[in-house]
Amino acid sequence: MSRGGLRVAAIGSRLIGWTIVAALPAVAVAQQAPAPASGASQTADQDLGGGPTGDILNPENLFQLYYSAKTAPGSGPDGTIRTVTTDTFKLRGDYAFDLSPDWQFVVRGDLPYLAKDPVNSVNPDGEFLYGLGDADVQGTVIRTFDSRWKAGAAVRLITPSGDWDNGLGSGLWRVQPAAGFRYSLPEISFGSYFEPFARYDQSFAGDPAKKAISNLQFAPLVNFSLPDRFFLSLYPSADIRWNFGPPVTGQTGRLFLPFDARIGRNFSNNLSVSLEVGVPIIKQYPVYDFATQLRVNINF
Image 1 (cartoon, rainbow, N blue to C red):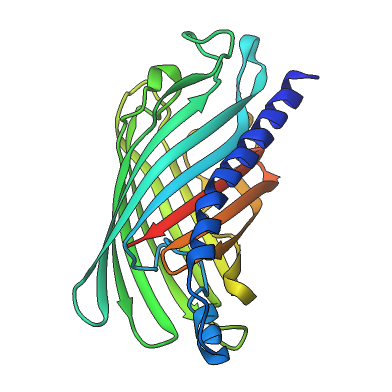
Image 2: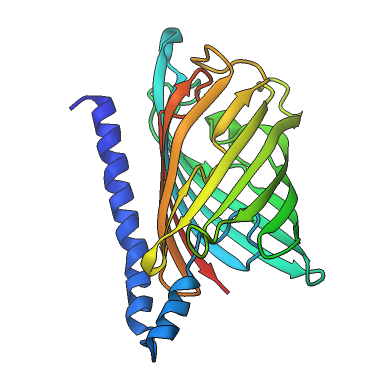
């Protein structure tokens, strides 16, 4: 089997393993949950699982276990382009403060651990390297206008905590201001909504030898609430990109446009599991060749 085929097989096996690990506690919680006393209470219980937890305009207290596998073009020997695989294990925490009946403030923190196989001066053979990635913190202000409308704005600070000499971090301080709104769609189903949001990723300090980062990121998120607490989200991540910064390896234009979808289930009011997959449609600005993300959210 080719090196590329081995990478795909490895990603698939890791994803299956993590899905099984995530599903086991979810199944246990679902089995222990008491049965509803009547048909009416069953309907209300299903309505509670209308959508994913942890999106930008959903003020909740949660702890998230996150795993992603991504392949992207990277620099190889003699100027060639070589596929680089990045596995990310991340711990996320969200905590929401109620400022008033209509205003909330949400604090978020991410601590990533990476496994990556770049080719560089310290890793000429392209072996997997392991270490912390770039940690970040985010603050979001959310205003609820009525039962249909809410809006919010956020600022995310990304620190150069990853080992950038080994390619595990950007080596740059970055800021990401973001804004979006939500419009509920009860005509489709309880819990369905349209929630577009945009953010700008801008580096402002750090290693001067590293390329500056400057790109617009957009997500036209649409969530469909499905029966039995399942949900389907289209474009839940801000993976649509327009690069204003220096070109990266393999770049031929400025636009990256993928197809991105997430399917998941809320097993209880405190446990949600989802799987997201992204594949490029337009890859003038190469962000990834393939990306998948597994999230386990525990609400408290």
